Length: 193
Image (cartoon, rainbow, N blue to C red):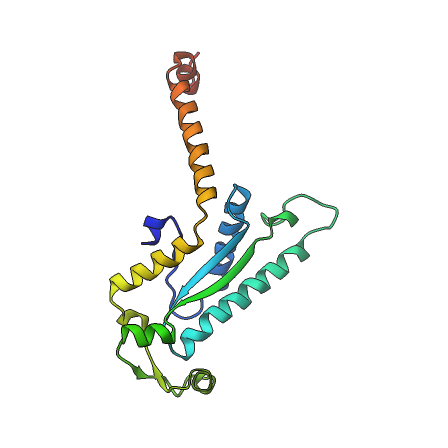
C-alpha cells in the first residue's frame, strides 16, 4: 500500500533504531531539497498496549534530538556541507499516531489480550487509558489497515505539489523525446561524434 501511494514504509519491532531515524531524516531532507514538502510526517500504526504507545513518543524524541544535534556540527559562517547537512537542510518532522486507538478498538472490535504487567510502562498505560486490556494492530482485517493507510496519506496529500511535479515530469519527458529524435545527440550520448 505504501509503494502504491509513493510513501516509504518501515516495519519495526519496538522502537526504530537511531540509524533508521537518521536515514529517514536524510530522506526527508533530500526530498525537501528536491522540491518536496517543507514538512514531513511519520504516520505510526501500532498496537494499543504500553509499548505501542511509547514507540511514537520515543521516535518523536529521537528525531528531535537528531535534528537538534545537527546544527551544532556547522560553523555559522560556513555554508559547506558537513556530514551531508547544511544549515538550510533542517526539516520539520512530526510523528502522528494513526492506529490503533481506542475509538478504532471500539469500532473494529479486535480481540483483547492482557497488557503485560511486567512492562515498565504498564501503570502509566492503565492510568492513561483506563484499562488493563491491550489490542494488537495485526488483529485488524488487512483491508481495514490498508484503508486506514490510504485515508491518512490522502488527507495529507498536496494536489498542487503533485500537479507541479507532473508538469516537470511531462516537460522533461518531452525534452528527452526531442533529444532522442536528434541523431547528433544520440551519437554524442553514446560517445561517438
